[in-house]
Image 1: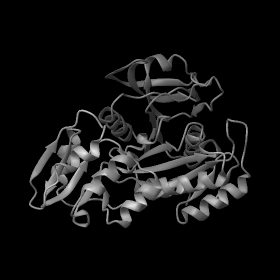
Image 2: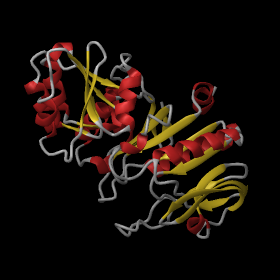
Image 3: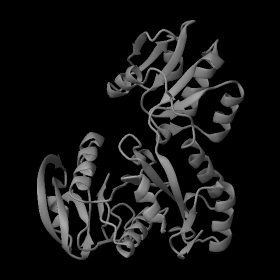
Amino acid sequence: MSFLEEITKKYQTMSIIGMSKNSGKTVTLNHILSMADEDGIPIGITSIGRDGERMDLVTETEKPTIYLTRGSLVATTTELLKLSDAVIEILEMTSYETPLGSVLLGRVKYDGYIQISGPQTLAETKVLLDKMLDYGAELAILDGAIDRKTSAAPEITQCAILASGASVHRSMTEVVKKTAYVASLFSLPVIDLYRDQIGDLFAKNTYGTISEEGQVKEIPLQTSLNAGKKIAVEFEEDTKIVVLSGALTGKTLVELVDSANNLQEMIFVVKDATKIFVPERDLKKCQRRGLNLALFHKSDLVMVTVNPFATQGYRFDPFTFKESMQAALKEIPVEDVMMGESS
């Protein structure tokens, strides 16, 4: 059984995340599309941001294009559809508006290259992923934005692939270390207490605390500046859960840990692994002091891909790079999408 056949037995939605710009995210997407074509698995795709253009609009360097085959489903915009040579049967015009036009849902009638860009909110993106499944896709893929890793969106996708590569850092050792650390965040425990109350706070994009008895206290913050200290002021003796909306930075986490008198009795909750921007050293230091950090949404990391080539002009030895990454990640499959070597 192929990798993708195994995936579709367990998951219906997937995100592709990049460790950095030019880490091989679009190449990874094309690799998955090729696998789906070989296995005869109907696929649907959309994107946070814009993907598939031949030239990077920022760096003015060539980018991998996206090729879709007959039967594939795609959500993109009216303006980008004009720039694509795949022939698309429009299934639905949505009410979602973007700077690149209205978002539409279509099915490929004739193979070709296409540019994709989806809705501007995760809620709208979730609607389209579900619609693709309704129209017959066995796997709906969300291609992430180039900036940071928030595009994993575990709240709307069930699994993720992490794309890493030489562009992350000039040192192979550092790339492996950074990637293994990000991968480890996906294995943090999922909170099982007071999920309704926590979900309400996340829905409001509000920080808050929850007592042992389930009492909720909202903590509105106008700015993330000194957020840790502002949140810690609200700690009480019976505070059990601290809900951290938005991104969690190292400075905020250290301030929270330094201010908590009953640290080992408290659980700090972030929405998902992609919201954690804490240096590994800081996180481990806080965990040694008794930090309990948990996720509200979990997305299983099912593969890490590696790209040994950097756009800056240097490269890693592909076999050493892949072997080193696999040794660091242990049970997570690693695949070199540039060289075609899989584990």
